[in-house]
Amino acid sequence: PELQELRLARREFLHQVVDPESRAAELDVAQPISHRAAESASAFSRGAPVARNLHSLVDLCHALRLNSGLALADLRATRLGDSGCRILARLLADPAGPPLRRLELSENGLGDGSARLLADALRRNSRLAHLGLERNAIGAEGARQLAHLVEVSVALRRLELGANRASSEGV
Image (cartoon, rainbow, N blue to C red; front, top):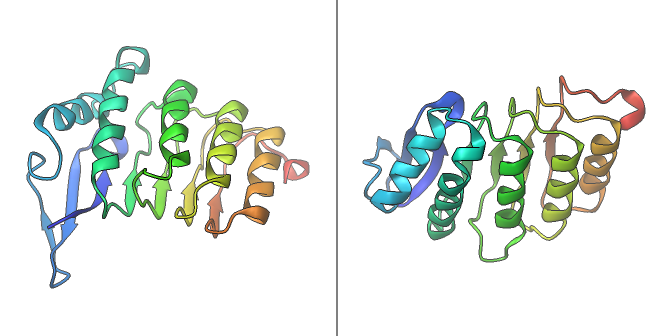
C-alpha cells in the first residue's frame, strides 16, 4: 500500500494508508520511507527546537518526495517556524515534489515571511488544493500575498487563515 496521509500534528507520529479496497490501515513507518527518514520525522515531531532539527525536516522532505501517493501532510503545532517553512516551500515549488492535495501548517509561528515563501512556491504548484495556516503570526502583508495566490492558483481552492495577526485590510 502507498502512503496517502502523514500526520505529525502536535508531535504525534501517525501514518495512515488506504489499501486498494479503500480500507484504512496503520502502517509501520519503515515500510513506505527509509528507517533514517522515519527516525528523523519522529525526532522532529517530538518538539525539539527547530534549529537543531532542520536536518530532520530535510530528511522528512526527501521521504515525502519519494511517496508518489501522498495527499495529506498534517504538520500542525510541530514548531516549524519560518526556517522550517523555507524548506517546505522549496519542496512545494518543486515539480517533482509530492502530490500533496492538503497541507496543514497551523500553530507553527509562521509570519509574513513564511506567507510570502508559501505564496511564491504555490504559484508554481498545480496540486495543492487546501492550505491550513490558522493560529500563526501572519500579518496584513502576508495575508495579501496569500489572498492574491488564491486568485491566480490553478489548484488552491481553500485557504484557512483564521486567528492570525491580519486585520480585514490584509485581505
